[in-house]
Amino acid sequence: MNQIIDVENVTFAYDDRPVLDDVSLSVAEGEFLGLIGPNGSGKTTLLKIMLGLQKPDIGSVRLFGTPAAKFRDGTRLGYVSQQSSESDTTMPISVREVVKMGRYAHAGLGRLTSEDTEIVNEALERVGISDLADRRISRLSGGQKQRVYIARALASEADLLALDEPTVGVDADSRDRFYELLDELNESGITIVLIEHDIGVVTEHADMIACLDCELYEHCETHRFLEGDALERAFGSGRVVGPSAIASGD
Image 1 (cartoon, rainbow, N blue to C red):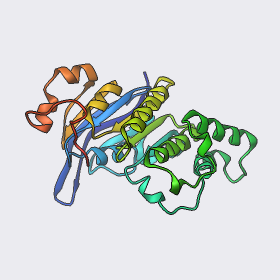
Image 2 (image 1 turned 90 degrees about the vertical axis):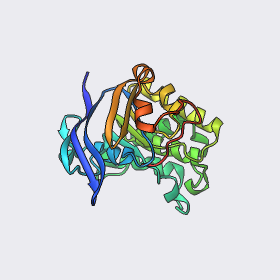
Image 3 (image 1 turned 135 degrees about the horizontal axis):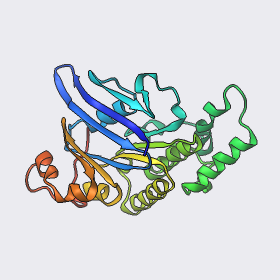
């Protein structure tokens, strides 16, 4: 099976504050990896390094077999950050226009073709927001916005979808539907890397877990993780896996 991401011996610090210490892991094609850890554990930093958005102080990262610093095919990556929905509170742009952005790299200097338009429409339909296509994104709920960004990634024909706490502030019903969508996308072959504060949700949907707190405590299949003690070592004794198991932040 092809490796989508390879992280080798990555260490990173903000000034004098260590964030990641000698972390190594890989993400295989078609995998659904959940990144978990307590507040300040380095999850967001690791995700950015995995995507080539941040350089490690020590170590290396390869994306689709290419050193992350030299990787240029951004259309293969779909990234939904914590701040995505917050940045669009006043943008006078429609849902369809946001999703069209996923096609611009394919179109180059030319205009979008009828084929591009069809791909945009299919992406909107696939995530269930065709009826919102002409609505301003600033008027959507948090959960609806996250679907827009996933549709944009689908329109770009991304092979990897990375999400950093995508359901913060989203109601329970919308969250359940959101994760049903992620499951469907993963089953269709899209590789997913997810940071989520609800450990119970992560262990329900991800097939692989990476548990860290500066160092990597465990990286294994979800069922093996649940049988081990990495959760207790990372979070401390008394931690339960379920809806109340919250560890938000980096």
